Image (cartoon, rainbow, N blue to C red):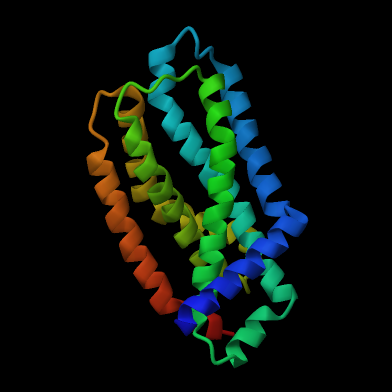
Length: 226
């Protein structure tokens, strides 16, 4: 019970700081919106609806992955500046609670961006779902968590590196590749109705479980490293 309360306190602190400045939310929203607009102008989705449905899932997830990296780096830099990591090292509370609170906060921020962008994305790409639309309720949280849990962990790993803004995408993108392929496969299956999205969702479920467990177990080592 104390562990859950500690996670909630970290999550509450993250939400309060972000909604006070809105730096991460606005950055992610602007970056992803820019990708949607540029690619919708690059070709005419109304004249090629089949092609639009085939590539739309990939564009959305790649855009969210790129946009998330800037916000993830920024969240840990704020902790470093305010001395939160030094305080956490001296605190009796479990370090994994700090990681889990921050990962949940990042999950909520990316989810808010998805909720705002989804209608815009469907309008710009003239999309109509031909598959199982209910599967989106499983795909969005599983895909978002796959991006966020690894991104939060590796952003903390590179926090003391001189070029941490460059280091995070170099580490995160190759490791997130299996999850990204599963997200794109499931999204394309839902939009086109030509394939079943269940196999992609199963891969995402396994990926999320494995990387969440590893991140929670190893975060104390990352926090204690000098």
